Length: 141
Image 1 (tube, rainbow, N blue to C red):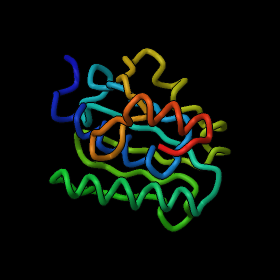
Image 2: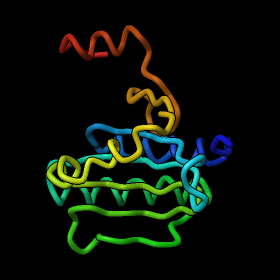
Image 3: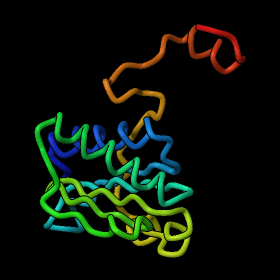
Image 4: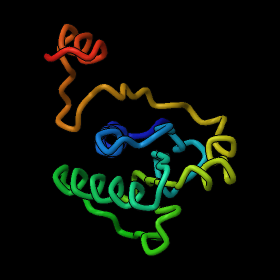
């Protein structure tokens, strides 16, 4: 059974929030066929503890705006691997070193990937093509 549409949408909200804070290597997985406790994983990396914290705060803020809050938070004190449990969606924000060591994506490699376009903002908007092209070239939009 595939992840519910609501779970997929919440996973995208979390991923957009992480992307807005420059999270690296964003990966969204549909784990519903492998786990009964949740439908989706969102996995993101950051190069410092401070960035991990910023990503976690942004995710919590956007998820609250979407009508949900975590039922459990783990790892926030250390800032190396934070787990946010939103029941249908579990978010892992890891320091890059932890991500490389634990390789969660290898453990869940048989699960379908949920497509995510990182150029989509937290409000769901995408930049106008000409503006995006000019930004890449260093010009003003």
